[in-house]
Image (cartoon, rainbow, N blue to C red; front, side, top):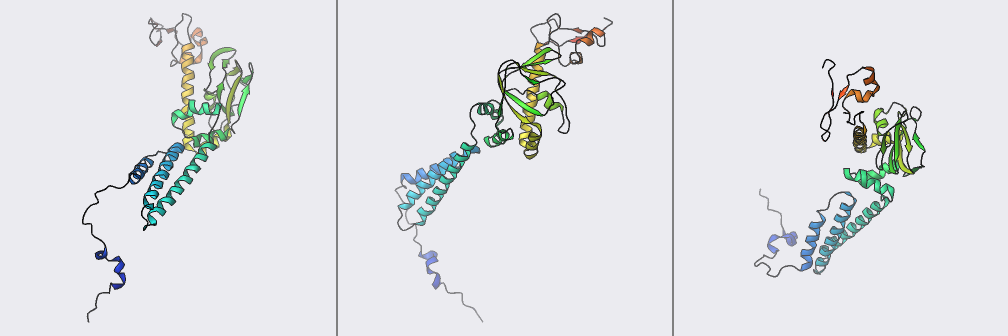
Length: 305
């Protein structure tokens, strides 16, 4: 018993034989709107990340789909050719407005915007992450009048991390001047880096305002909670704090001179322990280099020589 193939009479509309054959290519090219639409789509898909990258991408995509809609409108017998591009253009416009609203909501003005430009923008921190950093300190900027103390050695607990925004702070220990802290430097980076999250401590230096100062501060517990939620922000702060400590050590090295005007080398333990050890004979005295123009690397003098 043989079975006849199913009849295709009911599917005549889908027969390939009913489609017109392309006997000759169209000589006249498509209109300028057709080509402009595809150029705009290509430019739109070249957009990057971030608020401005998304705004760029959705703006060009909206214009590209709008041109496709205008081109499809010229085909009266194909309403779908213009309906879909129109719908996609409306969606891209709505998305672009949403991104613009989000970018405006995380915009910062004044000193916080300058803080972002001077410290965080250089490391590629997005405005979204910076908004979470500012929210951690509640966007509050503290003021410290001249000759007021930020910390007193041996008394002030280490419970925050602060960045100076304006003014100048004098750092001293046992009444002796160490160095200055200038705008966009941490006020307490060495103290912050010296403690673990579960440890407590007090300042070993005194910080006093040399002029009217303004600074932003993050409470220690809230900042550690932010680090636990965003490891990326924790790495950014670790990099900033350690770079700030290196700058402070360099400023100490340039200011440390012996009795004859030579610079000490910070890598020697004698400098860290203080000059009194040299007088007591606990370590050999230092012999500076003769070349004053080059970086000085001091060497201990052999007691037998």
